[in-house]
Length: 209
Ligand SMILES: *[C@@H]1O[C@H](CO)[C@@H](O)[C@H](O)[C@H]1NC(C)=O
Ligand SMILES: *[C@@H]1O[C@H](CO)[C@@H](O)[C@H](O)[C@H]1NC(C)=O
Ligand SMILES: *[C@@H]1O[C@H](CO)[C@@H](O)[C@H](O)[C@H]1NC(C)=O
Image (cartoon, rainbow, N blue to C red):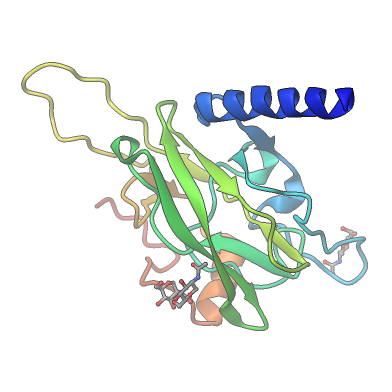
């Protein structure tokens, strides 16, 4: 009885805390190197891995895992698993708050063998946080990708310029107009081959736009 009361109390306290905290400051970091879109899985390693331990917490991609979820198809056998999960949509802007977006898991040359939805939020520091539910089956892993994320310009005057993202040479502005896609990776090349491309630049085309 006493135990029950304590558990209820704890649930109340933590329930209240988790709804009160901004996910931009209360997130779990995902930094595993195998989670990156460039990480290829082969027969001999101890992979595949599975994100079955996740249960709707807020996460941020950091370190060797990458900066953000890829917004284009990642072919199977990447991100440390057989069925990598990618974001089938554009990252939100800062003013949009929390948005719900579809994700796809690719497998067997099918870029969207499974689909689900996740919550995403753009944070003032120029990064994104994601509320990630447990994938419906194994082996599924939420992918990270190396991006340069455009910094927001702090301007409060009456004549602020339109926010403009400038990508460093060698990178191109992604479809969300907020992230700079890095050099063409192995994963992206394969994506082109299995025809999941959404009309991105050819490798070598680094012209400014
Ligand atoms: C497979 O993975 C192992 C361990 O990560 C690595 O040593 C090996 O070179 C890889 N083989 C191929 C063909 O990529
Ligand atoms: C992404 O989502 C759109 C709309 O929800 C869908 O039509 C499309 O097939 C999805 N992309 C892929 C590669 O399956
Ligand atoms: C999965 O995709 C179908 C077809 O595009 C869509 O109707 C459904 O809402 C999606 N499911 C989730 C969880 O997003």
